[in-house]
Length: 97
Image 1 (tube, rainbow, N blue to C red):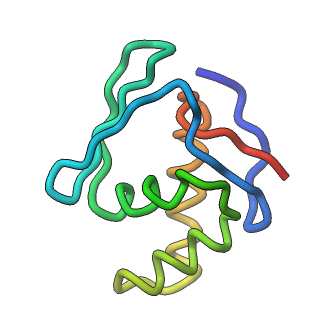
Image 2: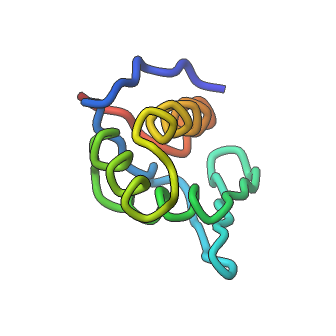
């Protein structure tokens, strides 16, 4: 796994180029072309993944999750940061400032 850059609400993230993904009835499946490993996302993760086709800040993603799902902002941000750190470590997202 890669070293994970620091992530906070102002970090900008985008789906990495070295992957292909598909929607499966609201879930998402991602193939990391660099390591040949498949990853699965539930509907919330799939929603976030779809938004990351374009660079977004963590705050923008959090607000979109709060608007779409029944979750408060602090919980959404905590869970989102955990997901994004994991995805960054696996090379699925690129993190900028």
